[in-house]
Amino acid sequence: MMDDIVATAVPEPATVPAPTPPQVADVVVEPATAVAVAPPTEPRVAKPASGPTVPEGSLPTNATLSYDVKGRAKGFNYSAGGTLSWQQTGNTYKADLEISAFLLGSFQRISTGLITEQGLVPQRFVDRRRNNEKTAVFDRDAGVIRYSKKTPDAALLPGAQDQLSVMLQLAGLLNARQQLVEGDVISVPVSSDSDAEVWRFEIGAVETLRLPAGDVTARRLIRQPRKPNDKTVEVWLAPNLGRLPVRMRLTEPNGDFMDQLLEDMPEMVSEPNPAQENPKAVP
Picture (cartoon, rainbow, N blue to C red):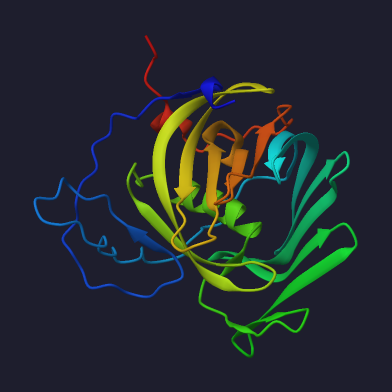
């Protein structure tokens, strides 16, 4: 499957801003660094941009995406179908991802919340697997994320997302900050259905993906595991589709994975200056 991917880097050199002390912010962008002559250290954190994090019009427009899903679970390969429904109504949003596989049953994630000048503000996250449902409620008055199943609360950090909304928030961030380059890192607090932690997405190259929907140009972002049992999270955002996710891949430490590949081109087409992310021609 991976042989179908043609990675093509954008010829835009990364610059190194003057180092600044680490700061806590709703969105943190860590610049790419030059080749080090000393032992590698954690990249310094750039000052957050002033003003809205995700200005109005930066989020992708409403769309329903269908995916061809390939994966492996407990050593068995499987194929499935999936859909992602992304809807904005006024200042509210709903994202609904559903995957159904023969023998494995259905898997659904739903994120609902508000849209502000900071982008998505989740209020409730639902994870359904067969007959089991878990929820995360973002209680902003109390400053905590409350989980079902008697799981302890987690601190609600500024800019926190859930595991579904973060994919759309990243799209809005890249639409709003087109100066971001390969090697930059975006740090976002992310909640699952049972805990929360900061995810660090490294911005990768622009690639031409050979998908069931056809050839699509997309920017790859990757979250590497940072502790035992962490999963690798990869997402490819297409500028010609408002940076909606045309591919999403989750890989477990044991090698199990789920790879969602865009099956059909959606009717909507939004182009927030995609010329800045055209890949090199492949000889």
